[in-house]
Length: 275
Ligand SMILES: Nc1ncnc2c1ncn2[C@@H]1O[C@H](COP(=O)(O)OP(=O)(O)OP(=O)(O)O)[C@@H](O)[C@H]1O
Image (cartoon, rainbow, N blue to C red; front, side, top):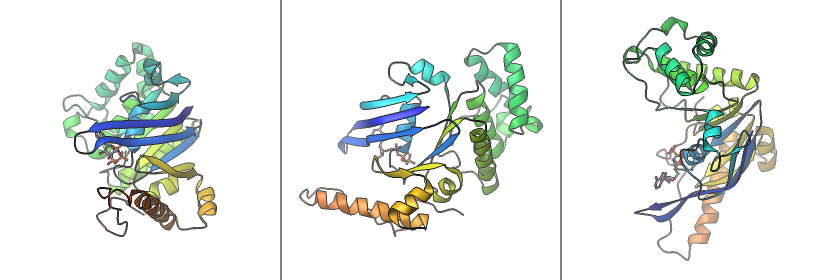
């Protein structure tokens, strides 16, 4: 369903010059699978997901979604995906029902089909008790459900969740993870980015660990544990990042203006091992 090969994105940054945000990234995601992209802030997760959703174009490499290339067939790609992030704007004056209906109309759905779909979605996501509540009066949990419903209204086979649990309270985040699991069980292809280790541990069928634009390793949790001879996922993760830092550091030794290594024992480093 999703095939990414040697995907690279560079930005021309005023401060950093030519900056490689995504560096030769390759992975595939199948139907009925949750693929987790795990990495600290700035790893390049959002950039990959924005390329997959056709918002950004790649500098090089291939990204194919549901059989369509993101560069040559962006409209078809958009028809086959739904995108959920943590900062989707919710219109204050529209009710939950109106908002999801509006997005269905944007996808060109007929009135009768749309009505049927809304009934199914509102029941599936348990949104019926707030279908007439306007955006301004919604809780964070309600807003997140509206974001998911409008990403799913056209019933896309691929769903992309970019740091979707960020800022949600524990209960709402837990409900969201349950929704994602049920979508996987219904055969959807899901890609889920986060910096929270326990979320990928509990949710994802396969995991790619990203750092500074590169995938350092990927596989199922048992595969990763075996390969690194480390059962504790947190240890495994930080060990992998540290080894990458040291390798980078050695490569940069001849460059006096090279980047300093990140101290992963420093609490300011943005990773979370939420239980
Ligand atoms: N438009 C841009 N111009 C220059 N650099 C950018 C731009 N967008 C992103 N970057 C840089 O690319 C790198 C990857 O950013 P990206 O947002 O993809 O990371 P991320 O893993 O999603 O982290 P976060 O959770 O912080 O968003 C970062 O160093 C970021 O500063």
